[in-house]
View 1 (cartoon, one colour):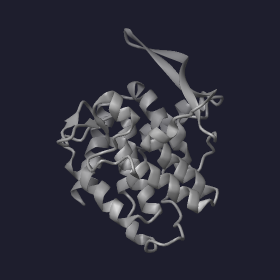
View 2 (cartoon, one colour; view 1 turned 90 degrees about the vertical axis):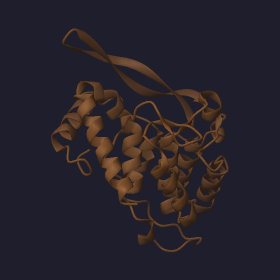
View 3 (spheres, helix red, strand yellow; view 1 turned 135 degrees about the horizontal axis):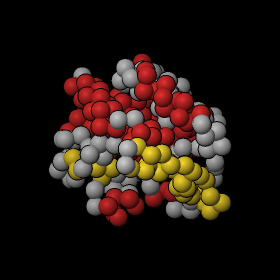
View 4 (spheres, one colour; view 1 turned 60 degrees about the vertical axis):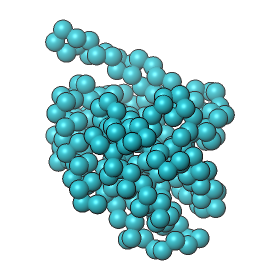
Length: 240
């Protein structure tokens, strides 16, 4: 928000809000992008209500994501979790494992999106998974995949959280998808070395707590923020 959307005051409010709940530092597995630790082997998560805020006549529930003790046994069936695992392994220096995880996630791509377990349940592709795949493809130097994923991001219209096989956006754009898309599009893969067994350092991880933003967004004039996010995404898409 601060770096890409020029929303410094709002970002400060988000930081201050998150600081009120120090016991809930885990917001999603995406935090590995910020090089923040995540549980591995992966475990299932759940939402718990930790607070509520009155806004006019409405009461907004505040939820935190917490890690359970139950192993995420079928995570390989989800493209996003394979990409997160690829980042995790690269941070640990296990580069061959990182490539294998990326390629497992890439194997769920059907030419239009990731036809993973979520797709089979929803009947729609999830845009954020294309953005996450693009991000990982960049720092693993899969340049041909970078071009494929960038092209799909550019074809989804209107740009939304979900899309169908005709690249028609479905529903609205949420903060999580917008943040991951901006992060993925904002780094040039050609700054890194050509594809090789050596892996480049992941692009600079902007301080975007995607899930935290999604939770707080209703408290911070959500519509205006999403419009600003969307305009930022469109600016990056037009530059492709």
